[in-house]
Amino acid sequence: MVPVLAFDIETIPDVAGLRLLRGADAALSDADVYAAEIADRAARNKSDFMPLHLQRVLVISCVYRGSRGLQVRSFVDLERDGRSEEAGVIQSFFDRVNDHRPQLVSWNGGGFDLPVLQQRGLRHGVVAGRYWEMGDDDREHRYNNYISRYHLRHIDLMDLLAMYQSRANAPLDAMAKLCGFPGKLGMDGSQVYGAYLDGRRDEIRRYCETDAMNTYLLWCRFEKMRGHLDQAGYRREIGIARDAVAAIGEPHWAEYLAAWPAEDAGGDEGARPADAAASALQEPPAALEAAPVAIVETTTETKTTETTIYIDSSSIRA
Image (cartoon, rainbow, N blue to C red; front, side):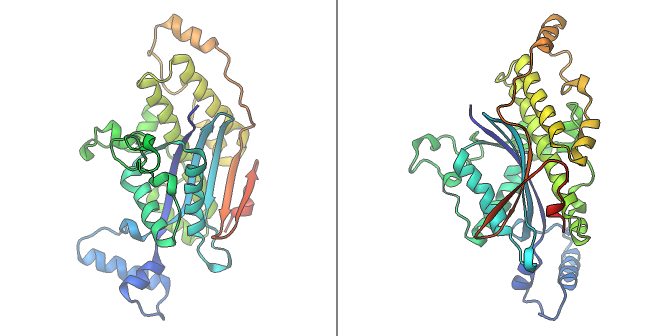
C-alpha cells in the first residue's frame, strides 16, 4: 500500500528574524521587538498575523498510516540550551517524506503549512530532495509530484474540496464536526503564541496532533467519496484509527475519543441500504501489524532522539 502522511504544523512569530530584518536595537527585549512590529502593522492596517517567512515552526504533527498500522508522530522544538531547534524539526519531517514517499495530506497545507516549511527549510539549509523531485531524475514525478497544485501526491483537502476557489474554503473544525469527528480541542491557532510564552509547549503539541488526526479522518472519508474505499473498507480504516487513538493513552486522546461517538462511525449513515450497511458492520476490523503508539521526536541539527510515549509526555514539557 502507498503510505499516507496527514500532517499539521504550529508556528510562532520569528522574533529573531524580526530583529534581523528590522534592525532592532539589541537592548530591546523580544516582547518589545514583537510589540513594535504589531504596532507598525496596525498602523498600516495589517493584521498581527506574521508573513509566512516569519512563521517559526514549533511543532509538526503527523498521522502516518502504513502497512504496519497507524502512528501519531510529532517533531517538537524544545529549544534546549536556549537555542531553537527548528532546523532539525523541519529536516525530520522531510526525511520521512524522502524515506517513505507517502501520500501527503493536509488541510490548507498548500496555502500555509508547506510554504512555511519550504521557506523556513531554505533558511536553515534543510535537504529535501525527494520532496522537490519534479521529474528530472524520476519520470514518475513529472506528472504527479508534491509541488504542483493540481497534482495529487500532496492533496490539500481544503483547496481541492473548494475547487481551488478561496471563497469556497471550509474550516477544518467545521468540516470535521459535520462529518461526525471531534474537530478542534483545547485551543485554536490564535492562542498558540500565548501558550508558548506561558511554557505550555506540550499543550500545543497535543492540539497539533488532534488537528492532524482530524485531517486524516477527513482523508478517509474523502477516499470513500471518490470510490477508493468501499463502505466496509472505510469502516475498517476508521476502526483502526479509533483503536490507535485508544491505545496511546494520553489525556488529550481520551478527550478526543469522548467527543467521537462510536455509533456514528464518521457520520456515514444512509450512505448504503440498511442491509449492506449491516453487512459492513459485521466485517471484522483488520489487525494492526504493529501496536499503535504516539511518538514525540525532539530534534537538533546534528542528532535526532526518539521517545515513545504511552501514558504521559513529561519528557517534552518546557
